[in-house]
Length: 191
Image (cartoon, rainbow, N blue to C red; front, top):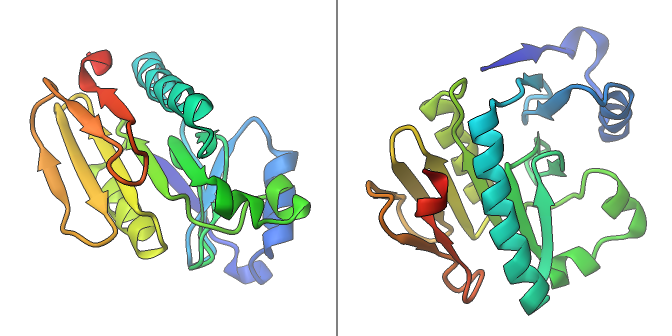
């Protein structure tokens, strides 16, 4: 569940103003859509937080070994090419894309779409809202994305050049494919 704050009557917010707004309200979690509306994101429950930690831990261990990029948690906002600022539950950016940013860009909301994103459905999320978000990542340059719904035991895999694939079993592993060579997530850790 989320709530939107409309800022059109005050002329909206620039990227710097939105960043400052988020810094002044660190106890709250925000995103901003491409229309400039600020979205308040509700905290997750314990189970979702636990699952997200399992995913980020596995991703970070793989990345420490391969040194191919940079891993981010759900508190990192990315300014997408369509001007939305989004915070995936877990994400990864290739070393080349990260190193191409200035130090200032790295310290604020990096102006890029991650190469890999994970959205983990919590009890308060709507499937339609998360699917729209995944499509937004895909359109903005994400190469591989996983929308994981543990309560439904389903995963939707988004690839930059293919239709969405639905996985209806938590018995196997998800592959990082050519985006994250050698990375696998055993879905059993989400039970």
